[in-house]
Length: 104
Image: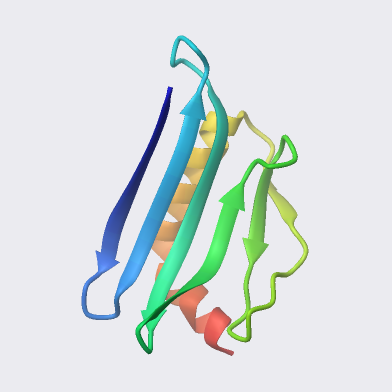
């Protein structure tokens, strides 16, 4: 089973959380996911931060305003499902600071 959704975090600042995931056949375990923090500036959507499990681990990718993607780092050593939930919580709680760091 797979799913995706977009959540508006801040309508004034145009900040979005985009989540895409796949679960096992029975829907019990997350087997793939991405959690993306996006900000809209100048009419364009820009990726600020990406959490995913493309390499089988819960990884965090920081982006820079000029389009750079820094080296991935493991941010959670739990299951992929726990990592996805942790990523969503981190973005929801800390998106303002994440965007501030992206802008520097």
